[in-house]
Length: 338
Ligand code: NAD
Ligand code: NAI
Ligand code: ISE
Image (cartoon, rainbow, N blue to C red; front, side, top):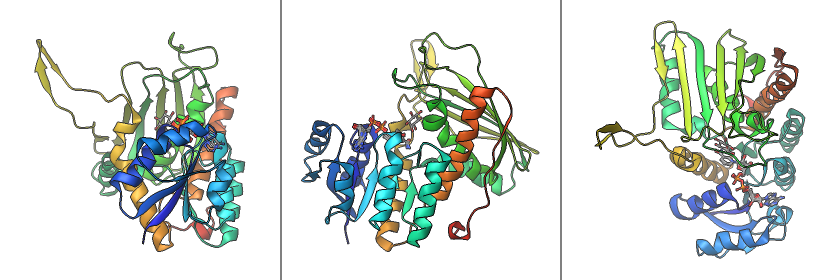
């Protein structure tokens, strides 16, 4: 069986996901797309030589008779609306992160999904599918470094556009760590504080960059994450776990070690598309397989909610400068791990 996909939002990642669903992965076909900028949607399918319908808006994609499942790859503030529409239509939906702009918005999705009676939502948290993060988690769960005590992490982008503001460092960028570090440590956040070093001259008036986010988990682990989205030198994701018996570090992406011009060098990637290319393939193949089988198993609406509860606390901490509590309610039985 071929799962017929509708894609809402054909920008950077929308085009990447359309390409992988059409040329790399098995069992799916893109049959409908939409973008608020219709020429972008038309160009996205023309570029790949696809025969997909270009719908007038995202809701037409969701309700199209032809569409079995939906990918939401439009801007962050549109995710909640389209995910709720897919749930209302009873169609599985893969929604890029963040699931919604606030925990309250995510909660509405959780409630709607529970009311529908089965899992219909997978959130685009791809890092748990990344081979490096998986290897790091195995070292921890195998007890090789003993109990984790501290994590030192960094999320660095080359640069961001003028539309990217201080809050987006949390809702758009740190949201990946908010998910993956819960998964990695099998723990939840207890408190958070945000501190601002001197701002880089490469930023602009509405963006404080870099930022340092400090967490304490329920289990007492201390975590620091540097977010630096105008770091200039590359796309660089770091994660070091300090345990009782040793230290384990996320592997660097493989690269050629080059001797040239009296220098020994390795290449640093510059784009998230390349850094996590395999993880995106694996997460979306899992969505296609699980949606076809009628049972989603990937990052859930509850995971999206948990990350947004922490994100809300981070936003509060950005403004207060204080240590803020993270209050995640108990997970409903509906979301018990399979
Ligand atoms: P983008 O701006 O390049 O593309 C988004 C596209 O969505 C644009 O073409 C825009 O016109 C379209 N769009 C916006 N609102 C829409 C609507 N209501 N209906 C249909 N189309 C709409 O952005 P992007 O970089 O592709 O990011 C898209 C989403 O994917 C974001 O939510 C982002 O957070 C997420 N993302 C996740 C990762 C990841 O690593 N998991 C990477 C990139 C982007
Ligand atoms: P983008 O700006 O390249 O694309 C967004 C697209 O959505 C644009 O083409 C825009 O026109 C369209 N859009 C906006 N509102 C729309 C609407 N109401 N209906 C239809 N289309 C609409 O942004 P990008 O980088 O592709 O990000 C899109 C989403 O993907 C974001 O939510 C972002 O957080 C997420 N993302 C996830 C990544 C990941 O690693 N998982 C990486 C990059 C982005
Ligand atoms: C982007 O939307 C992503 O999700 C990337 O993975 C992240 O590194 C970047 O900071 C975001 O803007």
